[in-house]
Length: 116
Length: 114
Image (cartoon, rainbow over all chains, first blue to last red; front, side):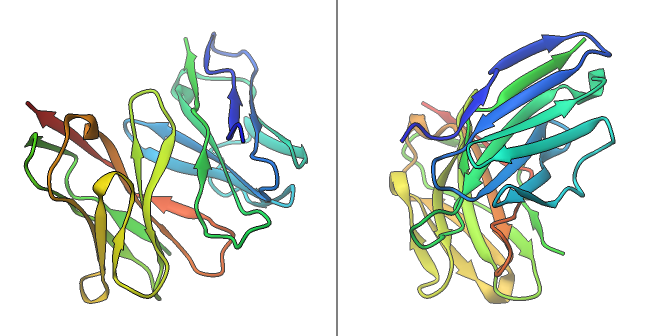
């Protein structure tokens, strides 16, 4: 299995621009999580989906952030408009599957976002 | 609500020395507990996990952790550290019955001296 695939790996953009981060989960995993990692705040859970349905988005910092999961094999995290304080590494993680759910999260390699 | 505390932000050990990374959690019942490792520029990789049963769990790369309910702790140990163990280590807690929602500690950055 290819694991969780995130794109882009690196994104540099200017303040005010729209940013879209993408995630392809491991096939068969039915839970998907978006985390943000910064030096100041560590790993923060932004939102998670179960069977493509958003379950908890209480970690989404502002209305500028939105996430979708239109099908079981794709999710996006969008920031519009972006601000310098959004600079961080954004991780997608997935879990679940046909085998007994062990609770383990499988992480992608992250998308490093820099907003100038 | 769940929370995790990793009191050591940064630890330096000599290669071959033993290692213990501390983790304390707050949760009203018996949680699921995890240790993850993150190498620079990489995502997080699971080292080990505790769900139930034996409170001493073995993981990959020679790591182990012990769940101590009375101390609300889940400390990570390794008897002899290798230079390749230099990385950041995260403890995480999950609530039973929840959809694998994990709360992570702030991490401990491990440096290994030759």
